[in-house]
Image (cartoon, rainbow, N blue to C red; front, side, top):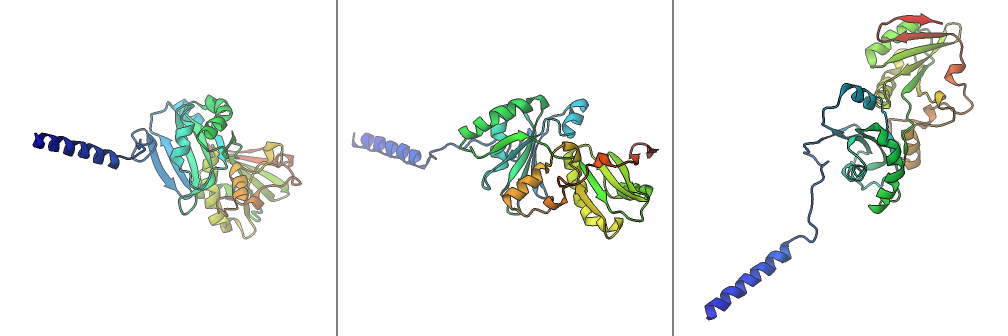
Length: 281
């Protein structure tokens, strides 16, 4: 009899001991955490990517690649991880990509870009995401449509012909179209057009590194002349607000309100990359 009660006591102590060692909060792995069967996670320079691995029809892929339905998130605290943002955003619909900006320590730089597999969800997300972030104790995160530029300006390429500029650009970067404007006889300014902002970002970085090839006075700037207002890119505004000193964007590089819009100039030279044909207007 004594042996029976002793055995019951040990079993009870074992159960209590096991309960004491169980965590109070059961951890559930995020569907966005690496390794994930549905999302690719990687980092390039100052951007962490969470990208859908699903096979996407080509017409939709072209829309998404051109930044259709892109959303800009700002006010993200430094300690918040990309996976946490993705989990909240996924409550509205299936994500295509999250471009989450980080510093050298891997902490958030305060902003990110988001796209859904269905680009038409953008308007719904802009309305509902602020409330969802508040529900997840992130009321400081702001949500709006991205207004990033996919155009660059190349200026002060003195003594270089439009053809020479075009051929050199082809060697350095990938772009969709080049438009040259003649400011006065023999002096051109060039608008470089890309399929999406992300391509423009990488191209600008490469052009800044090799700008001396276009002459010692040459400069490359963001073109926001078609905005109709004095608006900087999302990333430039976020960098300025966060004072993070990131090298990808420079606020002084953007046209200010007193500068002429690009379309104000006269003679133009269109040079398309597809057929290398020059069209003089």
